[in-house]
Length: 164
Image (cartoon, rainbow, N blue to C red; front, side):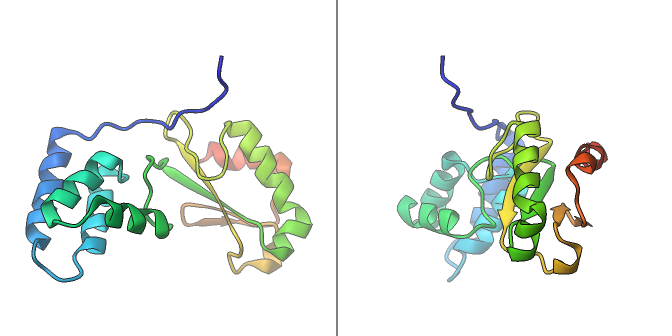
């Protein structure tokens, strides 16, 4: 039996496909359309799986490899569904030396996901960052737009419970 965790799936519905096609139509033949199309399609679908990238490729007449390169280059884009709540753990110097790495490990163990992954119930996605600009509050974790500083492992579960 394999321990490899598969990415959670989120179906692209017929209504989403209609919106994707409309976005492509609205940007077709416009210079520099790729990034706005990717942004809008990700907003509609929640992520950019290969099927969506292929549809954009055909619609904008841009090679799939170019689209894939853009999607994988920019951290804003994701090819796997993101959770409703994005957890970002700071691993900058101040946070790291004050326990950021241990907090990250604790969250990974509790949620059963690694950096860049999403829980099966699509509740949380986990990322690490090099600095959140809150060094005085180190170690820091940001969930969505909420900053949680002076973070201790024994408070993490209480904090996560606030996010459904």
